[in-house]
Each structure stands twice: as structure tokens, then as C-alpha cells.
Image (cartoon, rainbow, N blue to C red):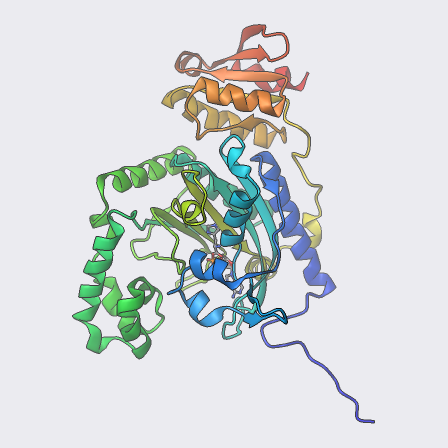
Length: 428
Ligand code: HAM
């Protein structure tokens, strides 16, 4: 009888025990940060209707055109192994009536994904992500919060030297015009582009920005920049994202050709890459805003954004940096129910709230908040839904005087306390 020794498929590696420690550390820190920011965990199936990704990820994307594992089931359905989470999360959100919940609805999840890539380090056919999505926020502070969360996860894992790159891709008003300008520009340089980019001009010219061929990069560098073509609303939105990143002391680089390879993005896109080397590094984390996808999937909610981190790429970097996975064996934090909700009213109070939240985070105390909300009633509604004992109310006056109104939600009584006493007051 002939014996057969099997091997794993290319790009679909096993995860061995010492690697599993990194996986677990990455997921543990993601869970802690998800807890602090009030994200609830969900799981979506690995196999979905192929149409979900064709419509969601986008028909013209490389992921759908070249990388998706699709097959017909015995029952004749056209299905796909999920190449990313976002379309599945939007489907889940709309399908299960989560649109009726107070906004924003914040969901996260993790698991394996499949893309038929040319296997190499950091580019696998089966890989894993942790994925965060925020539904129901058009506020530019959400982008800053999301980026901050990802940086906090990396920091907890010992990764601090990273670059945050941001760009805006405009909206359905201004993006089509820019697309036209870009096509015209690349058409006029068609002869100098590689064969693949020649084909990309009409179908997906933004992909040319990502081409690794030197001749294409040279031409890309001189291409028109979308930020010069943004409509006033998109320009203002982008300025506000930058404003909140600065308010949160998050260094970032404006990357005018960051296009990301997915069709649904509008306005802000971002990537987080390891810093410190000249060579082009693959992103550890990527994401952006995709305000129209929910409506495309039959929902009605305004505003959505999210991002995902690649677990293998982060693990590889931790190994390179010699960060021992065992040192990361911490407990999951922020698991307790929030006792208080931080309400902020007005710009000054919002900025003050950002600082106070950092204190709660540093003291490892869970607190509820919704910085994307501006009105008192919507924040108090959320606070009572969460059943918190206290609301900490921060108006412009309190922010100036470094005080806060401590309101007992059960008795309705309230008193003013200095901000230095907040942590102690909420602990009781
Ligand atoms: P993405 O940029 O395609 O975005 O993937 C996010 C991260 O997953 C990448 O930065 C990388 O770390 C990892 N990744 C992607 N492809 C591979 C691969 N072939 N091998 C290993 N790691 C990989 C998305 O997937 C979007 N769904 C993110 C998002 C969420 N946007 C909005 N919400």
C-alpha cells in the first residue's frame, strides 16, 4: 500500500503552539480595547452568497475579480469564502434589525478570511483579522476614535513605532469627477504604464496608485490629487478628522494617493504601517468610511466606517521586534459594566472629554460615552438604556472650570465636583 504524506496548501499555513500565543495575545488586547469603546462581538459565517461580496466589496476590485474563492454548492447556490468582513457585518446589521438600536451601533469580530493571492510573507491565502465597524455615525470624530483604538491595541502589544496614513476619497458627488480626471491623466501616459495598469485605467484607475512597478509609480506620483477636487462638505469633513486626530495627539501623514483596494470607501481612508524603514511596508491595519453601503444593502442608517487588522502581519512584526508573546499574557480588561456615562455638550467639552477618557483608560476603568453625539437628550437616552448609575455631564462652563456635574440617574440628584475627583466618585 503506497503511503501519502500530506502538506498544507500554499498560503494556508497551520498555526503552531508558539504562534498561537501571539494570536491569543492579539485577540485579548483587541477584546480589551473593544470593551473600553463599547463594541459588541459578533460572528458571521465563513461562507456567504458570492453576490454579497460582488455587490459589497465591489465587482471591479482585485479581491472580487481575482482573489475570491467561489464555488457552486451541491444545491446550486453560488457561494464564496469571505475575503473580508465588512459586507457581512453590514448584512448582519440590516438583516437583524440592529438599525433600530440607538446609534452608533459598534460591532467587532475576528476570524479567518480567504484571498487567492500569490503567497509570500504577510500575504496569505488564509489569514486572520480583527475587525471593527461603527454604524450610524457621520461625525468625523469617529475616524479619530477608530484610529486611536487601533493604535491602543498595537501599543498594548508593544508596537509603538507606526505611521498612520490618511486620505480622503471624496463622496458620490465629487469622486466621479476625480475619477474622470484620473482616467484622463493615466490615458495620456498609457504607453509608459505596465500591461496591468493599462487595463486598470478604465476599470479601476485608483489601483494604479498601488502598483509596485517603478515606471507606474513614477507616473502616479505626478497624478492629480483627489484632495484638490473634494467638494466643500468632504473638504470640511477631512479637516475635522485631522482636527480630532490632533486633539487626540495622534501623529499622522497625509497620503494623497492612498486609495485602498475596496470599492465602498467614501471620504476618509487610513492605513497603519510599521515605521522606521524606507522600503514600502505592508499595512498592519486598514480601514475607512463607507457611508453608502448600508443603503445599498437595503438599510436606512446614515454613516458607517470601520477598519481591520491583520493578525499574521502583527504577529510577524512582534516576532521581528522580539516582543515575547508570553509577556503579553494579561487578563482581558474593561469587562465590567460601565457605572457612568460621560455626557459632553459643546466643542470645548468634547475636547475635555477626550482627556478625561484617557484618564479612565489609564486607570483601567470602564466608562460609557458617545463622542459622536452632540445633544444632551440623545446622550441621556443612551445612558439610561445602558442602565448606568451616574451621568457625568460636561458643558462648556464645566470644561473651562475643570469641573463636572455628577448626576445620580436613579435619584435624579446632582452635584458639581472637580474633575480630579471623578474617578473616585464613580468608583463608589
Ligand atoms: P484590507 O486592507 O483588505 O481591509 O485588510 C485589512 C488588513 O488585513 C491588512 O492591513 C492586512 O494586515 C490584513 N490582510 C489583508 N490581506 C491579507 C493577506 N492576504 N494576508 C495577510 N494579511 C492580510 C479590509 O479587509 C477591510 N474590510 C477593512 C475595513 C473594515 N474597512 C472598513 N471596515
